[in-house]
Amino acid sequence: MVGRTAHTDTHTVPDSSAESVSRRVRQSAGRLRDAIRSVVDQIPSAVAGPQALARDLRIHKSLASRLLSAVRLDDPLAAVRHLPRSEGLGIFLRAAESSLGKEGVGTARMAVGEFQTIVKTDLGGWDMLDMAISSWLPEARVKAELVSGRQVYSGLCSMFGVTAAVQLATAVLHPDAAGQNCDVAIVGGSLGLRRLRPGKEVPIESLGPRPGEPDPSSSVESLSDAQNPDDLPLLKPFCSSPLPPFRVITTGHLRDFVMSGDGFGVRSAVDLCLGIVSRSVRPLYQPESGPRIRVAASATISVPVKKLVFNVLLDDDMYRGCEPELILYRTHERGPASPNDPGRDIDRMESAASIQYLGRGPHCFHVTEFARHVELVQYVCDRMGWDINRLRGYRCRVQYPFPIAQYSIVFEPPSRETNA
Image 1 (tube, rainbow, N blue to C red):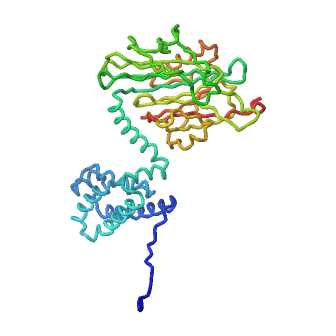
Image 2: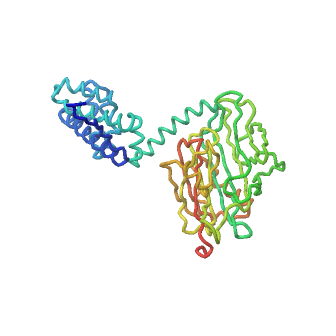
Image 3: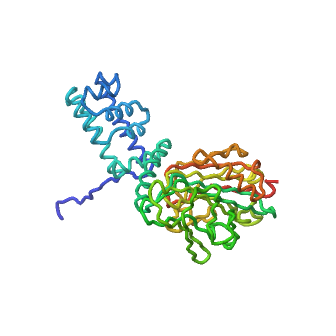
């Protein structure tokens, strides 16, 4: 139109890269911590500790304790992680204002408002802030995973109607007779397994083809004394007595064992220990041609459990110089995963869990949660003709492991020339 200058309104979108978001949150967190610290420093009773501060301001002692702990931290993200949320900060600032006046807490109120805005617009809220901080601060991840795991455990207990105190999984790898591959003996235990709802059938074990094996029909043998192949491979000397009844569901090559019966409540809790061996299922060396491969021993969680103790023991001649890697996979959509399947990389999950090197020999294999673990490993070695003194071990211990996940301890075999 004549006489009107055309113009275009522009709106600058903040940089949403991880580095930029982290910088904005950290800078605002620093201003918030400094402002709250300034308010605390103006209150003489804060020097005497949280109880005196709480009494002076008439606030709860836990609120005073969190405030004093947070303002003493140098790292801004660690500080805001310990600070109370907006409601708690509001209670503190209103209490402090009665002593210091509006001017004494004005800067702190502005810092709280600024931080709330950044947390909401950049992260989506305070809950998302906790997740982000657990990524930015490695030491915070352990606590964050523990809290999340406990919440998931409680929810799944209600859904599944069953729980266990400990899941024990121990894989023993040993060269086979031909010296090309290795046999794998797997012993697992559910300790303190019990129903939370009457009449609930409890899945115990699935036997069938395993991911990463060259031949889906690879032989799987029971380590128990049972003669019937349809029997659950229970290692009865290591189970509680009397045993509950079981039934088997066969689907093709897969056999699912479930605990039936009507036992219910705390006094019905049982300890179950199972053992199987797969022959010649993992290579000892890299193939002479083709892509490099990795070998995994894995533990999956079948029922909600408070703790997983996952051990891998292998003959000392195997995988010399190889440092194992812990990989956590989602399994709820596509089932068990192999580390040699690049299509499953998208299912990998981050975890603060780690692998502990145990050392060599039976004196290193004790498990606090299962006093007979060394005896169990000796039982396996005696049945297989292996020398327990030649085994070295690795362990992953996880509190509140995720039932939709597979925990894999992965080795990259050496070439034959390297291992010679």
